Amino acid sequence: MDENSGTKDLVEKAGQGDAQAADHLLQLHREPLRRMIAQRLDKALSARVDASDIVQDVLIEAHRRLSDYLRNPIMPFRLWLRQMAMDHIIDAHRKHRLARRRSIDLEKPLSGPGDGGDSSLDLAGQVMSHSPTPASEALRAELKLRLDQAINQLEEGDREIILMRHVEQMSNLEVAGLLGIAEAAASMRYLRAVRKLRQFLVPGGL
Image (cartoon, rainbow, N blue to C red; front, side, top):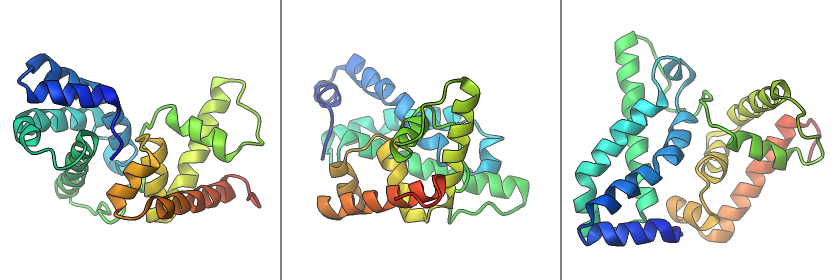
């Protein structure tokens, strides 16, 4: 699995008992986790729960379980955190549904856009390559809204691979490993998803 050298170095130092490296390791992944979680919160839930609160819960659990991970790192650190975050997202939807006594569709945890940050705009620049760059913040906001709406029209599998590549900034190798498929297959799935997304953004686009 792909893992940047900074993370690898910190994991190694933390495994040797360096407490400062362990803290730095967790803080290094705070913002990527926030983007990943925000994009996966149901619209109703995101209005009531801040993604940063879930991030904090994930990091607290990660700190508690870090020594176990370091003794047996069965997967890259980034994916270990991601798996933990997905569990917290599911739990947050479940708790919110029970508290509000109404249904929140747990089958589609990606159904509502959160605050994914500038990564959405970066993706829009790729799928709408022939469109001009927005000249104002108003146009940037409109473009991000259109992109979020288009992403939510994708089937769940296509939506997930778009989010993994552009919100979580995962490499094709990481996506392939997470999905349990060959790199070539992951690449093809991604290209198909981008094509479908472009069709929603630009009618008739290829």
